[in-house]
Length: 256
Length: 256
Image (cartoon, rainbow over all chains, first blue to last red; front, side, top):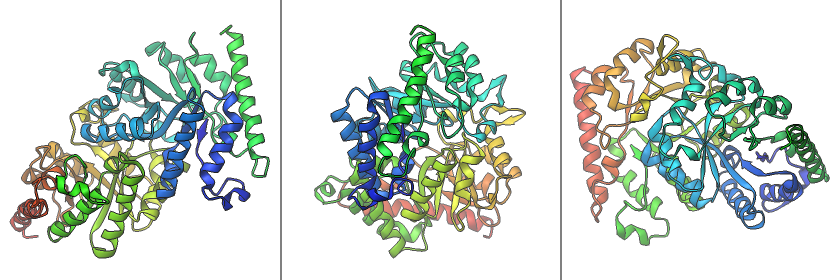
């Protein structure tokens, strides 16, 4: 579940609180954790509020790691920089904030990704095929003789500690998952784009599911802002349950 | 000048200060501003220290904008995300922190870049050809019939408000600038990699300079950590002066 918390979209009564973003996150996590396996704050939503936003993020992570240590946590930050700088980002997200995983952009290549892969028991989720329209600008076009997104997957599989890699593949491009599974039959994929962006859970599972499931399907806005009233947490819980039930059906179909 | 401030590399006597990163930045800016036209904090170095790091960045930006408003400021953040999220990053860097410019990664395409370009009097500096070894993984390989980094330049020139675009081209790949100037004869380029990374200022100017200069040549570590003693600011000033003098010579050669 994406924690893309937008102060303009949370219920108005929460805005009076000392830290509205954290109060909202806490209530949402409490209400939905039974149906979730992972939480994914998108960094942009916290950085937009400066110091206060960073504080809300730190508190959210402390809360998650203390109260629900079994939940997998993903910093959706899409970072990518030269080696000595990448190490700094790794420290920020894996050590300071204690995230389990971080999304990383592939454009700068091997020495911008490997510093993240060095961390044991931490996962680096490389952008492969994103859920947005702009994915067709470069990602789906051929680099050499295969599409850039496939080249990213193939090349990165040769990086040191590649076992710590996962990939982002947008739910809005579910049919591509069939070919992706030929390249990486077992890798875990983070799949955004179900919900507000219109991706189909059934299609994603049809083409992307493995015998170990292999999918982390994300929804953000569709759950977070299910209601703008006093019942926001309850409605978010219902939406999370709906998605979890959908996933449960897919698992049962495959006897997983 | 890059403000990649690393607490492990600043003079030990500063570590006793309340905010060592800000104290260091302030002294460095004071000592070098006469020879600089722009300051470029790399976000990774601030995020690595969590809340304290973000605070040091805010104070550095307040100081720069109040005391040296003529200095151009660049958030070297290499962000890139889907539209509604990109807008949040734009707000974080252009409005909250009041940077003049932000570096952005191109992998997610048009709708991940245009939200930044909407801001008047702000500049979006797209990664084209980076200074690191990993640039050869994808950037220099052909996407269709031209190298990916050229495709990024060509495609992005058609984005709405493309006039607000600048590009990152690494000094370590100066000879590529000749071809880049055929595509974008007038665009300003941010050129990292002179100094610690080994790029040559003369080569960069030879292939990249325009009649409006068109280059922002960056050095970070080579200036920041010129000395680890009490004389760190003075030594940084000398290094900044050296680079400025080098640039001055290049301008004089061309009667600019």
